[in-house]
Amino acid sequence: MDRNEAIKYVLPLILVIAIISAVILLGLASQNPDGFEWSLFDFAGVGEPEGGFEGIWAFLGEGVAVDLLTGIIGIVAILILGYAFFWMTSRKSE
Image 1: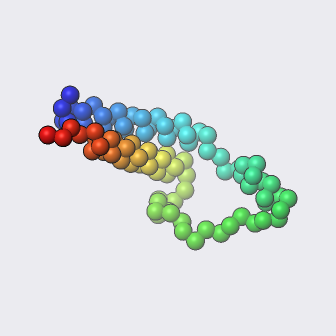
Image 2: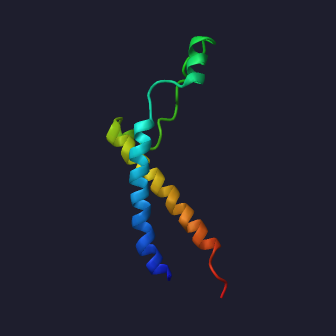
Image 3: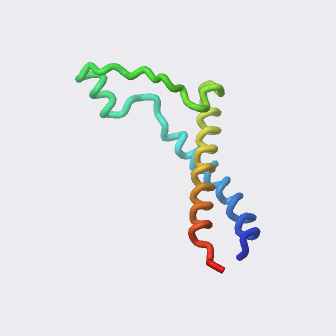
């Protein structure tokens, strides 16, 4: 399989994997603190830290659609970087 053929199959596969992963992981996300955070807040009296950096996607606002979009973008970026890394390191020397 040459490079153009691989790209023709790999890029749509990356997009499908990203969408499915983001939809599944979005359902697992919770606004409630986990056990460690809960124990810090309740028993140790530690307050939730104020963040100074809102993130690169802060201009989009908040909501399920924004979470889904940014999740898909992040997963696609990681998959493309991984594909590029393995493609570059597995090239045959000519």
